[in-house]
Length: 339
Image (cartoon, rainbow, N blue to C red; front, side):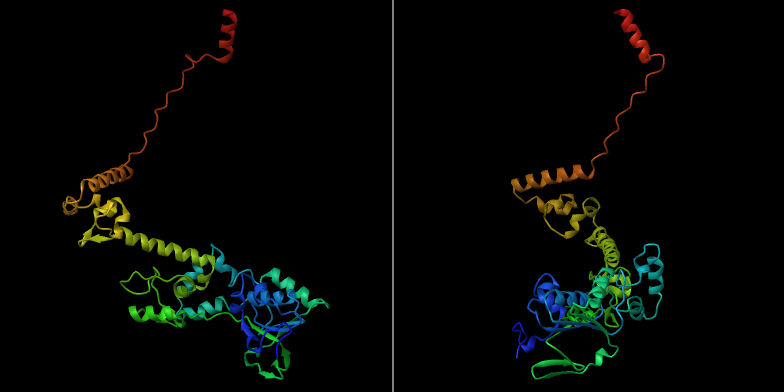
């Protein structure tokens, strides 16, 4: 049996990640559910978007079922975590916790719905002509599901399509990439997350950094939002700058780096090595005349950029004294007398 739009039974249970993969918006993912009975499981923004999209696509019945009553919040965690006046103190308290993972869960306990979506959901549920229903089921995780006579029954209700808006796995070690990196570098792990240091470096002695939600043990509960992204970017920018300016050549700090930090890329015999030691100059002596000319010109230009003196300020002329500067009326009077 199939749904009204011809969708086969194998596709009757799907995740919002799959729906978003079918197009650029949630509406693109639910195309073809006209006349169908749809159950959306979840209590966050994605669940609200999926339910409203199904209603807009013409579904006969749309049930948004959550484990607890829907909550409205502007951000995915407490407002204090995005308040610049309070976030530093909260992060300090977070870093002092013995169990940071549990602290992050308490700061962001679950999905919430922005006020604009909440208003649209309540308005639709209150309308007699709308197909939308809002339900709360604390035992939704133990729901009884069975397929009977071509219909999918969830706790006794028949549906043609079940959309799971239950989020994604938050433990990065479920990813093969993280598993391989952790094994190759023997990188420390705690509670399924990379145990990074204060510079977001994952492994000692390795230039391996972690940002985003996977660095939650150091960045705090706001690691995934814009505030956390900004903090992580600043930390890594400082670490990369330190790497750039402490690069060594032959066991000693290179004078090249002090003039041009791009030399730390290690492009041997490149144009930037015109600033190098005498040994490098001897190696370059065997190059052709054309190469020498190009290198010399590049070095001359870079040197002028590096040591260019500041433009001297133009000496200001002192203002005319009162004796020399005749008042405007006096000048006009003399011109008139002369005429």
